[in-house]
Image (cartoon, rainbow, N blue to C red; front, top):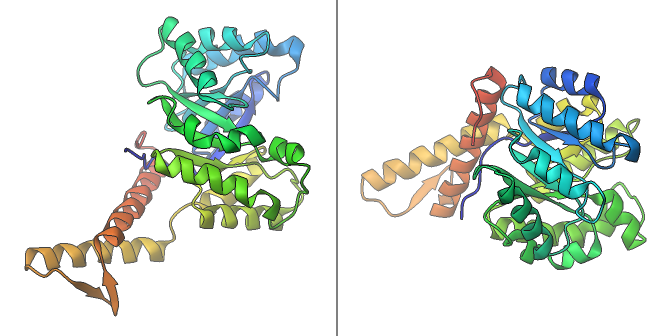
Length: 297
Protein backbone atom coordinates (compact mmCIF):
# COMPACT_ATOMS: atom_id res chain seq x y z
CA UNK A 1 0.00 0.00 0.00
CA UNK A 2 1.43 3.39 -1.08
CA UNK A 3 0.25 6.70 0.23
CA UNK A 4 1.48 9.92 -1.31
CA UNK A 5 2.78 12.76 0.82
CA UNK A 6 2.02 15.22 -1.95
CA UNK A 7 0.43 18.34 -0.42
CA UNK A 8 -3.29 18.55 -1.06
CA UNK A 9 -4.25 21.04 1.63
CA UNK A 10 -6.35 23.19 -0.70
CA UNK A 11 -8.17 22.02 -3.83
CA UNK A 12 -9.85 24.89 -5.68
CA UNK A 13 -12.72 24.26 -8.09
CA UNK A 14 -12.17 26.41 -11.17
CA UNK A 15 -14.93 26.79 -13.82
CA UNK A 16 -13.71 25.30 -17.08
CA UNK A 17 -15.75 27.81 -19.07
CA UNK A 18 -14.05 30.80 -17.44
CA UNK A 19 -10.74 31.46 -19.19
CA UNK A 20 -9.93 34.35 -16.88
CA UNK A 21 -10.33 32.09 -13.83
CA UNK A 22 -8.08 29.45 -15.41
CA UNK A 23 -5.39 32.06 -15.99
CA UNK A 24 -5.72 33.52 -12.50
CA UNK A 25 -5.35 30.03 -11.03
CA UNK A 26 -1.72 30.04 -12.19
CA UNK A 27 -0.99 32.67 -9.53
CA UNK A 28 -2.93 31.19 -6.60
CA UNK A 29 -1.29 29.25 -3.74
CA UNK A 30 -3.67 26.28 -4.02
CA UNK A 31 -2.06 22.85 -3.94
CA UNK A 32 -4.66 21.42 -6.34
CA UNK A 33 -6.66 22.99 -9.16
CA UNK A 34 -9.85 21.14 -10.09
CA UNK A 35 -10.84 22.39 -13.54
CA UNK A 36 -14.56 21.79 -13.57
CA UNK A 37 -16.53 20.64 -16.61
CA UNK A 38 -19.52 19.53 -14.55
CA UNK A 39 -21.48 21.64 -12.04
CA UNK A 40 -19.79 24.96 -12.84
CA UNK A 41 -20.56 24.81 -16.58
CA UNK A 42 -23.95 25.32 -18.25
CA UNK A 43 -25.06 22.55 -20.67
CA UNK A 44 -24.72 24.75 -23.73
CA UNK A 45 -21.14 25.66 -22.79
CA UNK A 46 -19.83 22.20 -21.92
CA UNK A 47 -18.17 21.30 -25.21
CA UNK A 48 -16.45 24.68 -25.50
CA UNK A 49 -15.33 24.42 -21.86
CA UNK A 50 -13.84 20.99 -22.56
CA UNK A 51 -11.76 22.37 -25.42
CA UNK A 52 -10.70 25.36 -23.33
CA UNK A 53 -9.59 23.22 -20.39
CA UNK A 54 -7.68 20.76 -22.57
CA UNK A 55 -5.88 23.64 -24.29
CA UNK A 56 -5.08 25.29 -20.96
CA UNK A 57 -3.63 22.10 -19.48
CA UNK A 58 -1.58 21.39 -22.59
CA UNK A 59 -0.23 24.95 -22.57
CA UNK A 60 0.92 24.54 -18.95
CA UNK A 61 2.17 27.31 -16.74
CA UNK A 62 0.54 25.97 -13.54
CA UNK A 63 3.84 25.23 -11.80
CA UNK A 64 3.82 22.59 -9.09
CA UNK A 65 0.05 22.70 -8.67
CA UNK A 66 -1.68 19.36 -9.13
CA UNK A 67 -4.05 19.56 -12.09
CA UNK A 68 -7.32 17.64 -11.90
CA UNK A 69 -10.14 17.78 -14.44
CA UNK A 70 -13.65 17.05 -13.18
CA UNK A 71 -15.54 15.40 -16.01
CA UNK A 72 -19.27 15.10 -16.53
CA UNK A 73 -20.88 11.84 -15.45
CA UNK A 74 -20.78 8.85 -17.77
CA UNK A 75 -24.59 8.87 -17.80
CA UNK A 76 -24.64 12.34 -19.38
CA UNK A 77 -24.23 13.32 -23.06
CA UNK A 78 -20.73 14.69 -22.33
CA UNK A 79 -19.03 12.12 -20.11
CA UNK A 80 -17.40 9.86 -22.69
CA UNK A 81 -16.35 12.84 -24.78
CA UNK A 82 -14.72 14.40 -21.72
CA UNK A 83 -12.68 11.27 -21.06
CA UNK A 84 -11.58 10.92 -24.68
CA UNK A 85 -10.54 14.55 -24.84
CA UNK A 86 -8.63 14.74 -21.56
CA UNK A 87 -6.92 11.34 -21.78
CA UNK A 88 -3.75 12.82 -23.22
CA UNK A 89 -4.14 16.44 -22.11
CA UNK A 90 -1.42 16.17 -19.47
CA UNK A 91 -3.56 16.45 -16.32
CA UNK A 92 -2.51 14.64 -13.17
CA UNK A 93 -5.95 13.16 -12.54
CA UNK A 94 -9.54 12.89 -13.73
CA UNK A 95 -12.26 13.46 -11.12
CA UNK A 96 -15.31 11.27 -11.73
CA UNK A 97 -18.57 12.62 -10.28
CA UNK A 98 -21.11 10.53 -8.35
CA UNK A 99 -19.12 7.32 -8.20
CA UNK A 100 -21.23 4.62 -6.58
CA UNK A 101 -19.69 1.35 -7.71
CA UNK A 102 -16.68 -0.43 -9.12
CA UNK A 103 -18.34 -0.48 -12.55
CA UNK A 104 -18.20 3.32 -12.92
CA UNK A 105 -14.47 3.36 -12.21
CA UNK A 106 -13.75 0.53 -14.63
CA UNK A 107 -15.84 2.08 -17.39
CA UNK A 108 -13.92 5.34 -17.05
CA UNK A 109 -10.59 3.53 -17.04
CA UNK A 110 -11.50 1.55 -20.15
CA UNK A 111 -12.30 4.73 -22.07
CA UNK A 112 -9.10 6.42 -20.91
CA UNK A 113 -6.90 3.49 -21.93
CA UNK A 114 -8.63 3.26 -25.31
CA UNK A 115 -7.76 6.91 -25.89
CA UNK A 116 -4.09 6.65 -25.00
CA UNK A 117 -4.09 7.78 -21.37
CA UNK A 118 -0.65 7.44 -19.79
CA UNK A 119 -0.06 5.09 -16.86
CA UNK A 120 0.53 8.08 -14.57
CA UNK A 121 -2.97 9.51 -15.11
CA UNK A 122 -4.94 8.75 -11.96
CA UNK A 123 -8.62 8.63 -11.10
CA UNK A 124 -10.22 10.62 -8.29
CA UNK A 125 -13.72 9.69 -7.15
CA UNK A 126 -16.46 12.03 -5.98
CA UNK A 127 -18.17 10.36 -3.03
CA UNK A 128 -21.48 12.16 -2.74
CA UNK A 129 -24.41 9.75 -2.46
CA UNK A 130 -25.67 7.29 0.18
CA UNK A 131 -24.87 4.36 -2.13
CA UNK A 132 -21.30 5.63 -2.48
CA UNK A 133 -20.93 5.62 1.29
CA UNK A 134 -22.07 2.00 1.48
CA UNK A 135 -19.75 0.97 -1.37
CA UNK A 136 -16.73 3.04 -0.37
CA UNK A 137 -14.43 0.04 0.13
CA UNK A 138 -15.39 -1.42 -3.25
CA UNK A 139 -14.66 1.88 -4.99
CA UNK A 140 -11.35 2.37 -3.18
CA UNK A 141 -10.08 -0.96 -4.47
CA UNK A 142 -11.58 -0.71 -7.95
CA UNK A 143 -8.32 0.10 -9.78
CA UNK A 144 -4.70 0.91 -9.13
CA UNK A 145 -5.42 4.26 -10.82
CA UNK A 146 -7.79 5.29 -8.02
CA UNK A 147 -5.76 7.65 -5.84
CA UNK A 148 -8.14 9.99 -4.05
CA UNK A 149 -11.65 10.33 -2.66
CA UNK A 150 -13.30 13.75 -2.83
CA UNK A 151 -16.27 14.23 -0.53
CA UNK A 152 -19.33 15.82 -2.12
CA UNK A 153 -20.97 16.87 1.12
CA UNK A 154 -23.56 19.21 -0.42
CA UNK A 155 -25.24 16.53 -2.54
CA UNK A 156 -24.81 14.00 0.24
CA UNK A 157 -26.56 16.22 2.79
CA UNK A 158 -29.44 16.70 0.36
CA UNK A 159 -29.81 12.97 -0.31
CA UNK A 160 -29.70 12.17 3.40
CA UNK A 161 -32.42 14.76 4.10
CA UNK A 162 -29.98 16.05 6.70
CA UNK A 163 -29.34 19.52 8.03
CA UNK A 164 -26.31 21.72 7.35
CA UNK A 165 -24.88 22.18 10.84
CA UNK A 166 -21.60 23.71 11.97
CA UNK A 167 -20.53 20.54 13.78
CA UNK A 168 -21.54 18.36 10.78
CA UNK A 169 -22.79 15.60 13.06
CA UNK A 170 -25.33 14.44 10.43
CA UNK A 171 -22.39 13.56 8.14
CA UNK A 172 -19.99 11.98 10.62
CA UNK A 173 -20.91 8.38 9.77
CA UNK A 174 -20.56 9.02 6.03
CA UNK A 175 -17.26 10.85 6.40
CA UNK A 176 -15.96 8.08 8.62
CA UNK A 177 -16.89 5.31 6.18
CA UNK A 178 -15.02 7.01 3.35
CA UNK A 179 -12.06 7.80 5.59
CA UNK A 180 -11.78 4.14 6.61
CA UNK A 181 -11.90 2.93 3.01
CA UNK A 182 -9.42 5.53 1.80
CA UNK A 183 -6.85 4.78 4.46
CA UNK A 184 -7.31 1.01 4.12
CA UNK A 185 -6.34 1.29 0.45
CA UNK A 186 -3.71 4.01 0.77
CA UNK A 187 -5.76 6.76 -0.89
CA UNK A 188 -5.77 10.47 -0.25
CA UNK A 189 -9.10 11.96 0.83
CA UNK A 190 -10.35 15.55 0.58
CA UNK A 191 -13.13 17.11 2.63
CA UNK A 192 -16.17 18.75 1.02
CA UNK A 193 -16.76 22.42 0.33
CA UNK A 194 -18.03 25.05 2.76
CA UNK A 195 -20.82 26.89 0.97
CA UNK A 196 -21.19 30.05 3.08
CA UNK A 197 -18.45 32.41 1.89
CA UNK A 198 -19.45 34.98 4.53
CA UNK A 199 -18.93 32.52 7.39
CA UNK A 200 -15.16 32.74 7.88
CA UNK A 201 -15.34 31.37 11.42
CA UNK A 202 -17.44 28.42 10.33
CA UNK A 203 -15.02 27.69 7.51
CA UNK A 204 -12.06 27.60 9.89
CA UNK A 205 -13.98 25.31 12.25
CA UNK A 206 -14.75 22.95 9.35
CA UNK A 207 -11.09 22.95 8.29
CA UNK A 208 -9.84 22.12 11.77
CA UNK A 209 -12.49 19.44 12.16
CA UNK A 210 -11.48 17.92 8.83
CA UNK A 211 -7.79 17.97 9.77
CA UNK A 212 -8.56 16.33 13.12
CA UNK A 213 -10.52 13.60 11.34
CA UNK A 214 -7.55 12.88 9.10
CA UNK A 215 -8.48 14.54 5.81
CA UNK A 216 -5.56 15.60 3.62
CA UNK A 217 -7.17 18.86 2.63
CA UNK A 218 -10.38 20.65 1.69
CA UNK A 219 -12.12 21.40 -1.57
CA UNK A 220 -12.79 25.11 -2.05
CA UNK A 221 -15.09 27.30 -4.13
CA UNK A 222 -13.32 30.66 -3.71
CA UNK A 223 -9.65 31.75 -3.74
CA UNK A 224 -10.07 33.76 -0.54
CA UNK A 225 -10.32 30.51 1.46
CA UNK A 226 -7.02 29.03 0.24
CA UNK A 227 -4.79 30.51 2.94
CA UNK A 228 -6.95 29.25 5.82
CA UNK A 229 -7.10 25.74 4.33
CA UNK A 230 -3.35 25.65 3.73
CA UNK A 231 -2.74 26.61 7.34
CA UNK A 232 -5.23 24.15 8.83
CA UNK A 233 -4.04 21.11 6.89
CA UNK A 234 -0.30 21.73 7.22
CA UNK A 235 1.60 20.11 10.09
CA UNK A 236 2.17 22.57 12.94
CA UNK A 237 5.80 23.61 13.46
CA UNK A 238 5.73 22.05 16.92
CA UNK A 239 4.52 18.74 15.47
CA UNK A 240 7.29 18.75 12.87
CA UNK A 241 9.90 19.48 15.55
CA UNK A 242 8.58 16.68 17.77
CA UNK A 243 8.52 14.29 14.82
CA UNK A 244 12.15 15.02 14.00
CA UNK A 245 13.09 14.34 17.63
CA UNK A 246 11.15 11.06 17.58
CA UNK A 247 12.97 9.91 14.45
CA UNK A 248 16.36 10.89 15.85
CA UNK A 249 15.73 9.26 19.25
CA UNK A 250 14.57 6.02 17.65
CA UNK A 251 17.57 5.94 15.31
CA UNK A 252 19.96 6.55 18.23
CA UNK A 253 18.36 3.77 20.26
CA UNK A 254 18.57 1.34 17.36
CA UNK A 255 22.23 2.19 16.76
CA UNK A 256 23.01 1.47 20.41
CA UNK A 257 21.01 -1.75 20.61
CA UNK A 258 18.22 -0.38 22.77
CA UNK A 259 14.76 -1.74 22.07
CA UNK A 260 12.87 0.78 24.18
CA UNK A 261 12.87 4.52 23.51
CA UNK A 262 11.55 7.08 26.00
CA UNK A 263 11.41 10.71 24.90
CA UNK A 264 10.26 13.40 27.32
CA UNK A 265 8.69 10.67 29.41
CA UNK A 266 6.76 9.19 26.46
CA UNK A 267 7.32 5.67 25.17
CA UNK A 268 8.20 5.71 21.46
CA UNK A 269 7.24 2.72 19.35
CA UNK A 270 7.67 2.00 15.66
CA UNK A 271 4.16 3.23 14.88
CA UNK A 272 5.12 6.64 16.27
CA UNK A 273 8.22 6.69 14.07
CA UNK A 274 6.20 5.88 10.95
CA UNK A 275 3.78 8.71 11.67
CA UNK A 276 6.66 11.06 12.46
CA UNK A 277 8.25 10.31 9.10
CA UNK A 278 4.94 11.01 7.34
CA UNK A 279 4.65 14.39 9.07
CA UNK A 280 8.22 15.39 8.26
CA UNK A 281 7.89 14.28 4.63
CA UNK A 282 4.67 16.26 4.25
CA UNK A 283 6.24 19.36 5.83
CA UNK A 284 9.23 19.11 3.52
CA UNK A 285 6.98 18.64 0.50
CA UNK A 286 5.02 21.77 1.46
CA UNK A 287 8.24 23.74 1.83
CA UNK A 288 9.38 22.53 -1.57
CA UNK A 289 6.02 23.46 -3.08
CA UNK A 290 6.11 26.96 -1.64
CA UNK A 291 9.65 27.48 -2.94
CA UNK A 292 8.47 26.38 -6.37
CA UNK A 293 10.96 23.53 -6.55
CA UNK A 294 8.58 21.25 -8.38
CA UNK A 295 6.11 18.49 -7.69
CA UNK A 296 6.31 16.38 -4.58
CA UNK A 297 4.84 12.89 -4.80
